[in-house]
Image: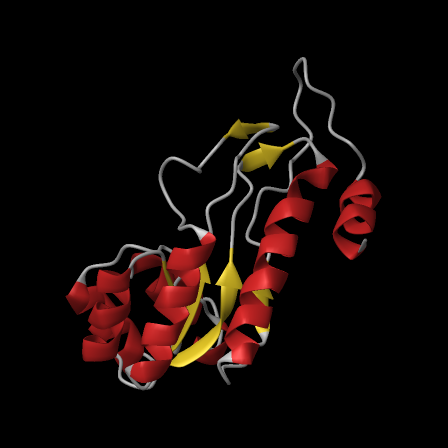
Length: 169
């Protein structure tokens, strides 16, 4: 919630913000919604229910698990859900009156492998297809972070264009 307030104070519009931490306190959800935030990340069914109770009608992005391979700081053990869990979360969100907005993922901080985005993008496509078969049409794919900054050290950082090309493919 501190980041939400800081972003708003810096001039961001609440409708541009994503509350991307997939685990939030109920009062933080309520307060963020009061401030105008309408898009929240989740990675569990209890979190979907919490958002439905604190921010009715809000939109959710279900966060999928990634391997984190190739990154300096993998996040795969901390956040994310399986494909089946993600479909269940977005179905539940829809049933609870939330907007099943889409899928998010994070390939790990300081990701040195441009191809790391491929598998989660393919997984997201599968999830979108499964949901479309159920009449649910998410329209957001949040690529998360992970793009490396150039640092001194043993692992060279590929040029940004390599990442863009891999993601586009």
